[in-house]
Image (cartoon, rainbow, N blue to C red; front, side):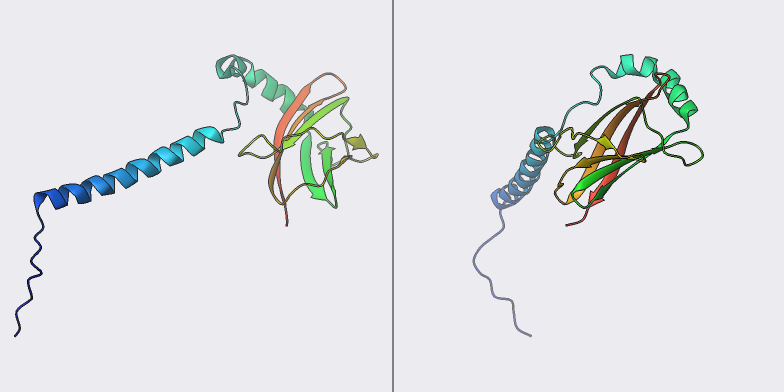
Length: 157
């Protein structure tokens, strides 16, 4: 058997302290970078005061569910199609409609395209970049009931 050669260097307490300090320094730096990016890319709040919004939530939800509408959004050849149907699957044309398109992660792509009724659905000309998109829909029925929903779809590249 041969003896292991001694390199002449010893692991001292200062070396161990430097190793631990370096490891924790990397962990802290990564956490700070992730926290900064999470805060910097947060698009904002859905409602200004969640407590006030919660006070009427159940009533608004019941009214919206009573409409028995279903909303669907999809991209189609340089356009966005937004369709409302009733309980029987028939097209519904709301009295008023506003819709905002955007992404969940930032607000730089948020915009409100102009939707036109084609007799069955709403269509807006819009060349969307590939990726995940949201449509925040606010529609009002003929009797004044508000219908609000966030719809999602994916645009292939």
